[in-house]
Amino acid sequence: MQTIQITGISLQELQAMLNESAISAVKKVLEEQKKPSEWEDISIQTAAKEMNCSTRTIKRRMKELKIQGYKVGKTILIQRKDLKKFKTPAGL
Image (cartoon, rainbow, N blue to C red; front, side):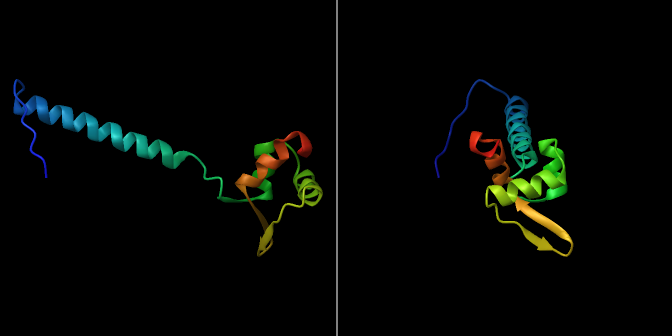
């Protein structure tokens, strides 16, 4: 473990600097957690809302682009990363 010697600032100033750094680090982590994961499973209803189209269009595009979905109960799920295929020129 290294020792760092800091001179010229008070203990309160050092604590304030450390608090600001900690708060900044926590905010950064929270922002990263807000971003949806590309591996996240979403329903075709959610996909349709995000793509601004109908669920029927999503199902048709899944069939055309050979995108695997799977059923959980009555809900059909796909991975968020597969929505990128919908946006490519080949997927339009």
